[in-house]
Length: 246
Ligand SMILES: [Zn+2]
Image 1 (tube, rainbow, N blue to C red):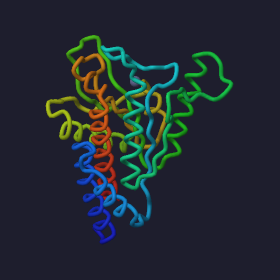
Image 2: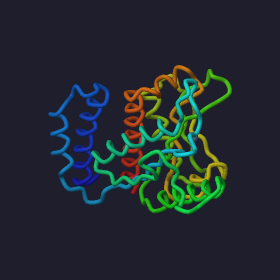
Image 3: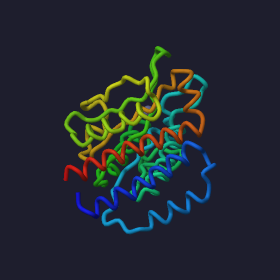
Image 4: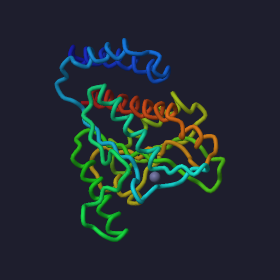
């Protein structure tokens, strides 16, 4: 490990601890911590790591619906926007597939099927143009309401995605869901974005909207911030591993 990496790692750890305090304690940590973070991140970083964030669904496509009637698309977007905030503070370069409640199909495309096709193609373009990593944020649903807990999916032929999924799954268990025994899941062509991109990518199913307790949690901004923070720590773990291996 050279001194540049040690310095960068030390700075990251400091920011990480400050952020942990802020996210977990809400706004109590206050302005002082924010000032210290701003000072820390203003130090130059040679290459900013890149990440593409995808808030699943949007616009006419609400995704699944919670037991209380909340659409998945809004939960995904809120987590993704917080994620952008956290990763930007950490010095990452973040691109988003969407920043508001809409489908991202090309203007002028008509018909649901064609709009969906165009929407996915545009999301894929955002993933492909990112050199670092990509995360698609979703919520799960099942006919049996007992099922709960986050689960990460990756493409079988994407080794970066596999490592990213493992790092994130680990963090969900460590920080949010100690009882979660789910394993990361490889997929083939059933998930378009994961299948088509060469960027290390993960679909993060953060929880089950069909489970009343988990749905209630995901409907609070506090829990969504904790989910975003958990994903961020997974990204940092993955990135640290990538530096170590390079
Ligand atoms: Zn979804």
